[in-house]
Amino acid sequence: MRKLAITFLCAIAMQAVAQSSQPVSIQVDLNKSQGAYKPIYSWFGYDESNYTTMKYGKQLLTQLHDLSPIPVYIRAHHLFTSGNGVPELKWSSTNVFTLDTNGKPVYDFTITDPIFDEFKAAKVRPMVEFGFMPKDLATGKEAYQVHYPARTTSGSSQSPPKDYAMWGELVRKYTEHLVQRYGKEETSTWYWEVWNEPDIDYWHGTPEEYYKLYDYAVAAVKQVLPNAIVGGPASTGPASPKASAFLDNFLKHTSNDKSLANGKPIPLDFISFHPKGRPEVINGHVRMGLSNELAAAEEGFKIVAKYPKYIHTPIILSEADPEGCAACSSKVNPSNNYRNGPLYPTYTAAAIKALFDLQDKYKVNLISMLSWSFEFEDKDYFEGFRSLATNGIDKPVLNVFRMAGLMSGNRVATTSSAQIPLEQMVKEGVRQSPDIDAFATRAEHEAAVMLWNYHDDDLPATGATVNLTVVGVPANVRRVLIEHYRIDANHSNAYTVWKGMGSPQSPSAEQYAQLMAAGGLELLQSPEWLDSEGGKVSITTELPRQGTSLVRLKW
Image: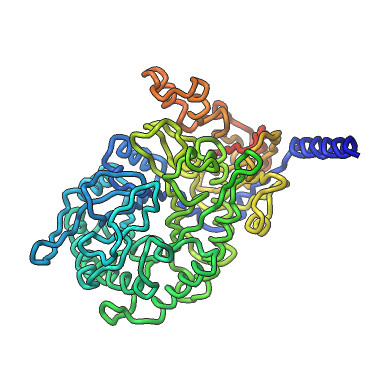
């Protein structure tokens, strides 16, 4: 009986390998537009705002600007937090507000100004997040700062203000200072968000107290900058009943109530919330939780779609990630091992398409899937933080955002013989057959196709032979220039090179140069001209499991 069972399991395994090695047909129709390609990829954020002014932080900001032809937005925590400006994991500070001995406010922009100056120098735009509560304004009785790995959100820096009018005046003064320093024209292009995740222990007050915090903050911003783009509530992903109710009730407040600050209608220029995935270790390997992120996004879109007033209001997923703790390295959480290699970018590619598809399904206006990932100073190489770079070395995930930055125009129709249907992906993730699919755009004289071979389970597997056919090339075009970029174990991947060196924590100058070169986005082969026959171009490529490609066509 046991021999029969083993034979049966082996037969299943052989069948699975045979199926996975069968050719996959993907077709792109450049004549079937599916709406605008909005740069939802060009948003990034991090807890430690003081990293902005540090060596590798400044370097990475410039790289983020360079990955996209359109503006890149940066969101950071702790812009109001009291302290000396020295960052720790999940902590930063600016000491912008204190009270003097007479109880009068004192505003000090010494620490915060260099942060925004670096944004300006790198030519990126801030998404200004008002948080957290200055020590002299906080009501909590707990210690003000709680150090990681203890729960950093348990301190009184997350408490409501002693005086809401004083809170509003802090926001007004801060906004006024930024407008004076950088100009009305520039600051009118920024986004201004009130707090972070007030439905969990990032906020130690009630939902009603958050509404009041929001009302006072947005009224203060609009007083200084009437055309400022303000919004919230930056709540957690509304997959749970609590998070869903919080977002829904917040929209009821802004839609139906009058401002608790001035009795006027409540401004809400964008809606933000945070869908997250949930990876885990299963039988010794990492299994991603893409369905968790997509289900949370879908529920949020459903809630927004209930309000005709907000159906066209921009939605900013101001943290959209595979899980919820950027500062928890893979040393702490082994399930975070996905962060260094090609699985992270492939997951991200699949998520980009699925989020656009969910937007289309509910007819809402998604403009951002902000990646809560930046860099961590003075940490080991490839320690497994959710970051875009490590000690100045680009990680593979940064390259999927570079790929997205090479796409433009309108989204166009794609079909694949091995794609996982959206409904199944939202409900189950990618747990059986891999999702081998594509996302494509068309601009005036070019098109781009992102391809991936994704599976939630990070296990060795046979790759796929992908036969890509692009139709709808203009009839008068005879030849098309093809550029093919690739992220996989051996391309656009400094992590593989670093491991091949023996995983040095003190690489030599020569090794560091090699890692720098290996971290960039890499062409799979030299660009080549292909004939276009009847408006059709065909390409065949081998796409490994957890591999991502970008094929650009120019004419």
